[in-house]
Image (cartoon, rainbow, N blue to C red; front, side, top):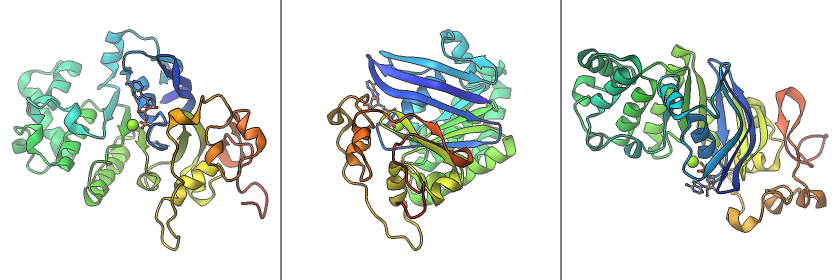
Length: 318
Ligand SMILES: Nc1ncnc2c1ncn2[C@@H]1O[C@H](COP(=O)(O)OP(=O)(O)O)[C@@H](O)[C@H]1O
Ligand SMILES: [Mg+2]
């Protein structure tokens, strides 16, 4: 459904995303995980054709058979919202503050399906009901600031899903919500994904969030994919030391919670091309890790990993 092939993004010549490749099939959810600043949002914005000024993308982004990189602005905006829906961390910045949420959802039908005003309004209320917003006809008349964070995220989902897109990109959609509401939204996404057989790219800095949702996980560090694996395999035996460190921050029954060593800011860690960007934080690093970037290579069971000295490769190691 959606395929990224060595997608790279630079901002004013600075690489921020390096050769991200992934395929998401219909009905499948891929989790894109990594610390703040590792390039997750830039990856999503490249797919949506919404990169900021100064940013350029290389590689390939295909929706079914169609190449999206290099399409003109009109073609991209027709795809956005219709074929690919997106939700963000903070719906307040994405929603229009001076328009009711009903009108904003209705606009999706007017733009992409040329629906008349009344039909669009009626379908907007249906869409709000589908994301389980209580009392949808009343909420449709509300302005974004009149809704709670959880309700706003539901409204944002209704907008993203209005035209039944084939692909949903969710960029930290639950990060701003409290834990209970977060669980409700995750549950909703899971249910909608099953009902509609969408391809989902779910972005989060928190591995725990996608443990039940994602089929596969792609872990990014400093703009590069460092490990991709089926979710269960990654949780059971991470092979990249960074994946292991991320996983160690996820509280689990019977495991003591540990913390990542403090992150040196990316600017301070030097150019990305001088070896593995994680090397200076990595307790398993070897001399070669500081001179060459380890290539992403295939490992067992559908896993890919970019590391010269991975964990769990031989008995007794790690
Ligand atoms: N508008 C921008 N101009 C210049 N650099 C940016 C801009 N937005 C993000 N960046 C840089 O791009 C990198 C990736 O950012 P981003 O994709 O937002 O990370 P994430 O979503 O993983 O937190 C960061 O190093 C950040 O500093
Ligand atoms: Mg982000």
